[in-house]
Image (cartoon, rainbow, N blue to C red; front, side, top):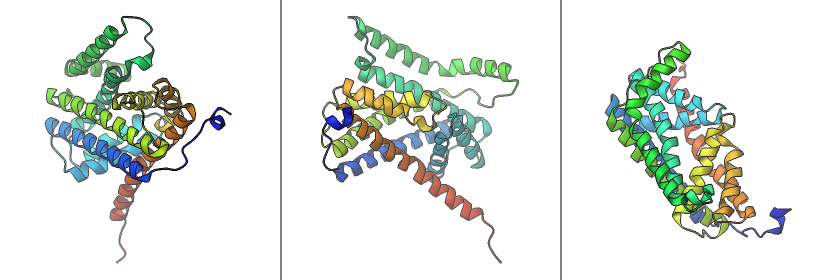
Amino acid sequence: AELRRQPLPERVDYAWVAAAFAAFGLAYVVLIQTWRTILASWDRGLPFADAARIWLVSNLGRYVPGRLWQIAAMGVLAQRAGVSPVAATGSAVLNAVVNIAAGFVVVMATGWRLLALPYAGAPAVAVTIIAVSIAVLMAVPWLTPHALRLAERLTGRVVMVGVPPRRAIAYAVVGNLVGWVLYGAAFQLLARGVLGAAPGGLAAYVAVYTLSYLVGYLVLPAPAGVGFREASMITLMPAAGLATAAQAAVLAIASRLVLTILDVAPGLAFLGRDTLRRAPRAP
């Protein structure tokens, strides 16, 4: 009933939607290149085409409940491409951990007001959380050996991750921060195309998109955060003054469609190509 009472856009501006697709694609390129750089600093590099295939195929693991399938697939596919097991697994784990941590840093930097800190010291608290988050990211090389030893004791298995080079941490942090900003810019372009307008600044769209993405990501049973990410967007966009509840619902569904296309179509295309190449040929 609430949705019916509020006006919705009469038409979609597909030029802006195409621009949003391009911006999301650029974010993917940046993240793939970031992972390539991490690998090169750890063990050996991969051609961009091979890295893109591995990254996009492993993205399909997002749609399997548990979220760890994506990391496992990336490590296995990288090993098949000739990367050492330690670098393959370690780079996948490192990139996933830094991606989440960098996302929280971005949210605190661009949208701490959305977290409803209702007291005068909120700006100082936000700055403190950002500083602590960055310090944790920089401490990953020292924390990793202790975390791995704890994981080995708890599981009784050898965890082939190794200690990441400091350069790999720096590359992962910078690349993922840029990736989150590009995601937010693409989200703003999509709002312009779907809703007809995109009130508010870039920072607000970055904050809303990043926080809703993280909420969906951290709900492990939900494939690709389906439902939880959209519910977060519908709550956060009106709170940020970017859209009404009805408009937020439309944009949340549109963003899910766009990202599902970008996640699934390239991955399935690469899988199909690989299957055809491995298929035995008739004499």
